[in-house]
Image 1 (tube, rainbow, N blue to C red):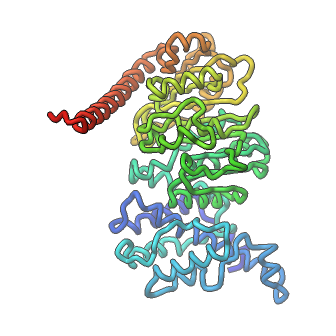
Image 2: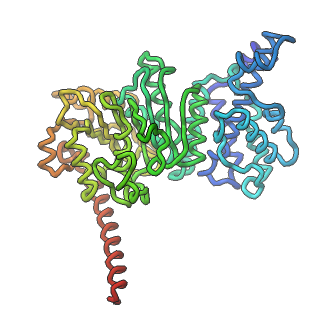
Length: 506
């Protein structure tokens, strides 16, 4: 088949997604649904790299014939040079010890292409106890019938298919897979609010599968900017998920990015001359209410991230917030973060940090979203928007938006439509309700003095009174009650330990 003939074999999005899901189904039984991603994504990526290499090799051979050299092909045609013996056909044709063959191929590819180190994750494909050879063969067979080269799939198709798998894995395995996947509509809204521009530097310190970085590219492209001028960065603590992030960006046609693995709190990886690097846009959906996040080290944090105080050891929400604010550029920097409603009203150390942030006039907006949007939690969440320099008309003010009614009920999770997103964004932009019109949301620009009179409580229901916010207040109160009970139990245990150490036995 010639290259032009292959165009008649162009895959549809539906056919590509069906192939990917068939690959996942090949793992049913021996592999837990929450671990599908660790097996399917590396094979998907390997097939794409190999098919792409074969495609450009054929194109180079047509163009140059006998005059083709390795140097010409590497410099003018190939995005990745796949070593001899490490291509898809070499692995798929293996009859025995298929896992060993795949392991060897992936390792040699990483050795030959330094920028791909770690991109395939850490699965030991040769471990037949974890993945029987028959299941691996079925996985390879599921991909073998499709071609993933430029004549058969476009970059946008690959990226969309990748997101399809992320979504399906999250739905199939619930909380475990949902930890690294933020629903596309939530990401789209947050990115739209932060308005990334051509030339911006962007970081996600809890990047997961890099969906937020991909969406910043889409936003710049849709607004007429040049996404090639963006500087994309992400940090992720989980090895498999950091590999997924790299694959996701490559499959969306992106090459100029930096994804680093490590604990953002104990080992921030974007540092220069002993200081955190500064970015135009800092965006994240970090793990909610993270326990044992490393509070003890933050009292003397070398990067001065505890500028408003050290958050509780049992809850890292405000550690994320302060890290992100510490990472934004002076003047142009803006931060957008997804948070549980508890950050709006919890007291103690968090209350003191919240007061400090408000007194520094860094918080621009609190946007309450509908419940049940996420795979990992059904609780209501909010978007917090911070700016290094707020617009003059919003200085010493905080915009509250109750968008909890803007959703479409779905089987497993609620969703927000494009119209919902546009309506919320328009409300955020104008900063006031439209007189006489009911858009299914309410908003109010509140003076910092009123917030101070409420002891710096940011609970949306204090400032916007609706039936929906009253309902959310109940959920928020229950969350606060659970937190208080947990703190009480911890205090009681510590008291018991001290009494026993002092000789006061029961």
